[in-house]
Amino acid sequence: MQEKTFGPQTILFDPEHFTHPEPDIFNGSFWHSQSKVLGEAKGRGTTYFFQHNKQEYVLRHYLRGGLIGKIIHDQYVFNGLNNTRAWQEFKLLQHMLELGLACPKPVAAQITKTGLLYRADIILAKIKQAIDVFNILLTDKISEKIWQDIGKTIAQFHQQNIYHHDLNIHNIMLDSQNKVWLIDFDKCYVKQGTDWQQENLSRLHRSFEKEKRLKNIQWQESDWIKLMLGYQSI
Image (cartoon, helix red, strand yellow):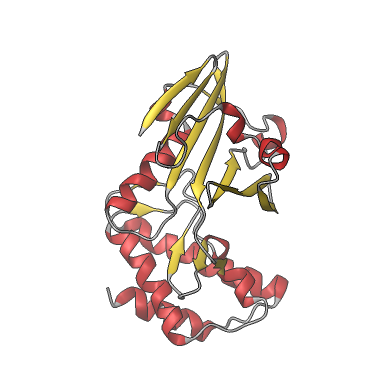
């Protein structure tokens, strides 16, 4: 990994993906101007999917949530590069990949300082032909084997002490080979002990119940039992 500074901006990047990155690569309008945007996902903000050198990437801007997010949209207190949200997520993803865990590959991150505050962005390699479990369950059921594979994958992260701050069905993906991936590791970290793991699973369980109630997804309690059988088998 390498770092470059452009005035108030500092970029952390993988030169295999971006040889000479400029701050523009963290702007969705730049990729639109190059006709490289493949799609967008609207949520708290806009996530851009774009193509560069025949590879596909995901660009995400860091946004605050909760009540404070209504006042301070996307700024954070700067307390050193290694303490920024983007650097922490980037380094955690690198760590997890070294452990062989199924997560996205980070390729670039940017911090833009303004006084004592900063804004941040991250670019990830897109997981090929993957769709999140929520969108699958809107129309289809998932087989018992896949439910168990989901449980096994979560267990693998837990065994490596990876705490996923927002473990829900939107952050679990299946690719075209039905390999299970976990995504969105903002505010996640290595957490010692095991006491937190059950609450992490309970959070995921609540997300299934919520989407069943709101969107009538193709899920039932017996599917959770299958997931837990996979989790406990590791």
